[in-house]
Image (cartoon, rainbow over all chains, first blue to last red):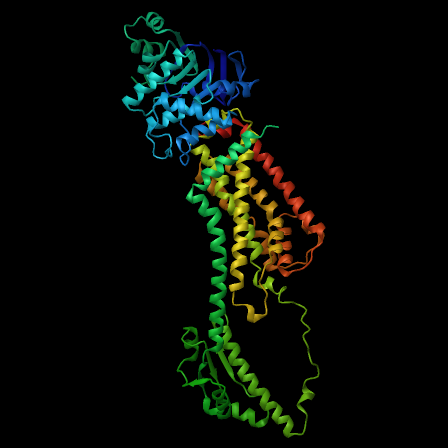
Length: 244
Length: 394
C-alpha cells in the first residue's frame, strides 16, 4: 500500500512534481496517466528513494523512503523505462545478479528463476545473452529481475513501450496476475488504452499536478463524457503527448 | 559488516568484462604485447641500421683529389671508394644524394710543404640524423692520416712524439652490465606508468558512464545495497584489471628482454623474479590512484564517449615525470619519495640498475601514493550519492 501526500520536486525553475497526492492499494492496479514530461517518472523515482522529495510525504507499507531507504528497496520491485539489462550476461545471469544483490540464497534464487521462467514463458531465452533481445524479451527479463525477491509493491514505468501486440497482451495478463496475488501495482504510462484496459484506479497527472483521480466510472461521471478517452482529454485539458 | 553486495558487484563486473573483447584487448593484451614488441622492434631497427652505416663502404666524391695524391692513396687503402668530383657539391649534399663530399683546396699542397695545417673541407649537413655516422667516419679517417703524418714529422726531427701528449686520460668505469641496463630501459618506468592508467581505463568508464548510458545504473541502485559497496565493487574490478595488465606487461618484458641484441654492448637486461615483484609492489598504489581518478572522472560523464574524452587527458599525467627525468635527470632524495609518479619512476630505475634502496623510500612512496589514491577512491565511492549524477536524462 502506497500513500503519497502533497509531493513536490523542483529542478531549478522547473516544477517537475508540484503537489501530487494519491493512494495505491494492495490487490489493485493504479495507473499514473499523463503526457511525457508530466512528472510521472520523477514521482516514481521519489517512491523508490533515488530522488529525495523537496516536500511532501510518502509511505510504502508504512515506511518512509527518506528514512528507511534500504527497507523500502527490499519490498519494491521496479521495472524502469530503460530496461537496463546487461548485454554480455545471459537472462539467467541478469536475474541472478539482482537476486544476489538482494541477499537471497543460491537455492532460493535458482528456485525463483524456475518459477519466473514458467510464469513469464521464457524457457527459450533464459540461457541466452540478452544482446539482441526483442523489446518483448527484454521486458520479460526486466520483470523477472524486478520480481526475483518477491516484492509486495511493484512499480512499472512505461512497461509496454515498444512492445508488439502479442507481447503487450502477455504483459497485461502478467500484471493482472500480480493484482490477483494481492500485490500493490503502480504503472505509469502515456497510453490511454493501457490504463483503460488494466487499471482499477487512475491518477491523471499533468504539469506536475494531479488533474483527476478515481475509478474509470468516477472519471467518466466527473467529466460528463461517454468514453474514457474523451474523459482523459477533457480532464487533462489537452491531448498533446498522449497515445490512444 | 556484510560485504556480499560488494563482492557480488565485483564478480559480476569481472565476468561481464572478461566477456567483452574490447576490455580484454585494451587491458590485458594491448599493453603487454604492444609495448615490448614496440621496444624490441625499435632497438632491432636502430641497432641494425647503425651497424649497416658503420660497415658500409664509404663512397665519397672528392674534389681536388690531384692536390693530395698520398692522402687519396691512404683513403683507398682504408677501403674508401673515391668517386669523381661532382659539379655542384652543395646541391648534391642538400638533395641528400650524397651524405658527405670532400674537397681538397688548391692551397693544400702549398701548406703541406710549408709544414702548416693543410685544409680539407668536409661538406655535409649534420642536421640530418642519418649523416652523422658517415661524417664521423670520414673525419676520423682524415684525422688519423693527419696524426700519422704529424708523428712522422716529429720523428724525422728527432723529437719523441709522446712529448705532445702531456696527459694520459684513463677511464675507470664503475658502471656494471646491470647498472647500464637503465640506459636501455629508460622507457620502462614510463611504459609501466602508462599501463597503470590504460589497464583500468576501459573498466572505469564502462562500469560508470557506460552503465549510465545503457540505463542500467538506475535499476542497479534500487537494489538494497549501500552505494559505496556498489562503487567499491566496481573500483576493485578496475584496479584488478590495471594490476593484471601491469603484471602481464612485466612478465612479457622479462621474456622478451633476453632476446635483445645488447649483450655485445655489455648490458645485462635480465630482470629477476624478485625484482619483478618489487616493481609490481612499487607501482601497485599507482594503479589504485589511477583507477580511482579515472572512476571519479567517468562518473561525471553521461556516456562512454564523453568519459573517453576526459580519460585521454588523464593518460597524459604519467608522461610528466618521465619526461622531466629524461630531460633533466636528478639524484633521488628522500623527500622526492613522497611525490606520486615521481617516486615510482625513480624507484623502478633503481631496481632495474640493481641498486639497493632504503626500505623507508619504498614505504614513503607506497604510503603517500596510496593515501591520495584512497582519498580519490572515497570520492568515487560516494559520488553517486548525488542524484544528479545517476540519471542519464535529467
